[in-house]
Image (cartoon, rainbow, N blue to C red; front, side, top):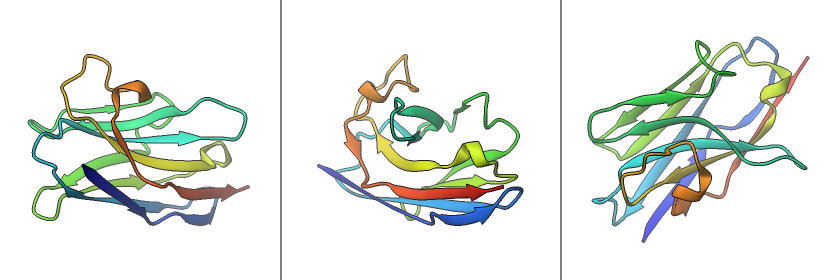
Length: 125
């Protein structure tokens, strides 16, 4: 079992920044990808950014490229999502997730086994 705990959400005006953290604990040895997803009520959960822990390959959704950065801190088993130049359309519940196998589809929520409880991000215009 892997436990994921997110922190760092909140409210900010457009153009502002927020930093989300995801702390992983438990049996994390076989974790391959850690990713951030978001969901707006009435819409499907979508991938925002993901990182392959063994090698550091990062993938971003087109809507956040150049604004969001995902990074890992192996010492503390933390994955961070730095969000800059936030837009109202970034408003959503953000979830951290991890896989326990390699996957050819790291942006597919179905590939992720473990999920955090979510943290709300609200961007006002």
